[in-house]
Each structure stands twice: as structure tokens, then as C-alpha cells.
Image (cartoon, rainbow, N blue to C red):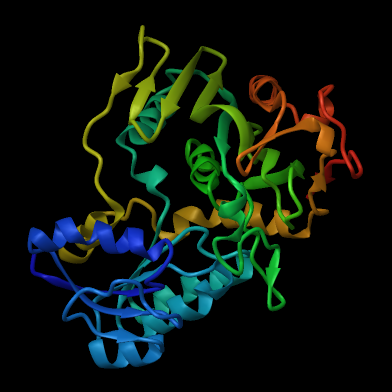
Length: 371
């Protein structure tokens, strides 16, 4: 491969992670960081790399071949469109956009410009997912009836004040949805949908929050797919013991379990989980696509089902706040007592939280919002 010029829009915050990820491929001669753009002063800009407050000026002057867009979701459509029209391929942070009209608009822009968008769903780069999908297609699990994922993390008060759009449903009149499902657990949602790649028919949600934010930090999401299978996502950012993300596929001939971060997979014939090697970064996959036409692992079209789900969450009633007595508060963390047990039951039974007897009360209605 020749050296590819890469520019980053959104150089602070999570953009620092992207800048770090560019170091190793730059040392290997695959990429060159050509420019940074951020409306705020850029933290620790690398020597010799031009910095811009205006992304349009950067695109015009630097003319990068690849642009990484790492900005709030409500800005993604305009920034990605500008990068495509400037002749660049784009690595776009998840979620790509927040409704299907914007998603379709980006797809149309790809066609019009002849460029491509790779969405930052690292879960789709898991070789274990590839092997799982092959096993499902080969009938090793029989007919798949349910796909569940359980994730229990902890985020402290500082997490929800990390940026002006943190914990917000809208910013300047535009949807933001910076909640557990659209941001930290977006990878889990996308991976459950990718097991079957079936169209989304129905979205049901029961969600809550443990602090005065606008979005959910704890949720059960049930998605009915066109083939009759159901997806159940049970997640929290106010968890007790840590559960990174346990994905389970239930078929009438067997069960499979996947841990995408570790690329561990247990199929029905396996006694224990097996490491599946061969993971490729989304950036390197994008570079390979440019050089050889290799298929994109997380192309924009593949993520349309995720956007369909997010669009339904936008119009759902807001999450309710649980009563203070349901929480254990320590050093900036608010733990929802009993949440791990409840979510584990939901994941196993395919149930929403409000379909079970929960050990906590709420300062709001106990309702389910159905899309």
C-alpha cells in the first residue's frame, strides 16, 4: 500500500483515541496524519500537523484521502457529506446518524461521489462474528429464535459531564441521544442485529436513568426481526459486578456464545469458548478497500438496521428516573441495586424490565414505549 493521507475532524475528546490509533499504522508507513480540525483549541497537536478550526478549510487545503469524523452524532451528516464531496473516503464514528432519512441521504452521497463510508462499529470487525454468522447460515444452531446481549458497566458523574452534549436527547434542536444504547452499548446493539441481518419490524423499549440526565443509562430493548427472531439487549451503566457484553444466540438445535472484544466464540459443538484470530482494524480494512477493493467490514449500508432502531428510540417516551432509595452512591458512582440480576433474567427470558418484578421503585411511570 502507498502512504494514505488522513485527516481528523474532532481532534479532542474521543478524537484523542483516533489520534493514538494512527500512530502504529503511521510508523508502518501506511498513513500520514495530514490535518486536524476542531472548533475548540486542540489538545497536544503533533508537531508539523496543521490545525484548523474550520473543517471546510482543512478539506480544501489538505485534500486528505481519508477523513475520520469523530464529532457529536447530530453533526455527522453535514461533516461526512462535506468530506465525501471533497473526494475523501470516511471513517465515521458510531452512531452514523440518528434517523433513516439522514442514513439514506449519506448512502445517496456515496453513490454520487463514488466514495465510501466505514462506520466505527468495531464489533463488526470481530472474526468471531464472521464464524458465528457462518455457523448460523449452515444450520448448526437450527432456527434462531432469540439473540440476547447482557452488558453491565459503571460510569461515574464525570462521564455525564464530559462534553456539552453528554447525556442529552437533543442539542440545539437536533437529536443527540447520548444514552447507553446509542453510544457505549451501540456496538452490542449492532452486533446482535448483524447475526441475522434481517429487517427490523418492531422496537420495544423499557428504560430508566439513575441521575438527572435526559437519556437512559439502563435499558432493555426488544427488537422483532422480519424472520420472526427477537433481539433482546439488556444493558446498564450503573451496574454492580462488571459484565463486558455477553452475546448469546438461541437456536432450536443449540446455543452459541460470543465475546466480541476477546474474539471468543463457543458454538454448540464446543466444550469451551475458542479464540478466533485474524482481527483487522476498521481503518486498515478501509485502506485495504481503497487499495484492493476488499469488502468493508462496517460499511454504511450494513448499519442501516441500527439506524432504524435508533430512529424508533427518538420518538419513544423519555426514560424515567428511579427513586433515590434504589441506589447505592459512592465516590461519584450511582449503582442501581439488583440491576445485574434483573438484566440477566431479561436477557435469558427475552423480557423487558417492566415485564418482571423489579426490586426498585421509580419516580416516573412504569410503562413500555412501543415503536
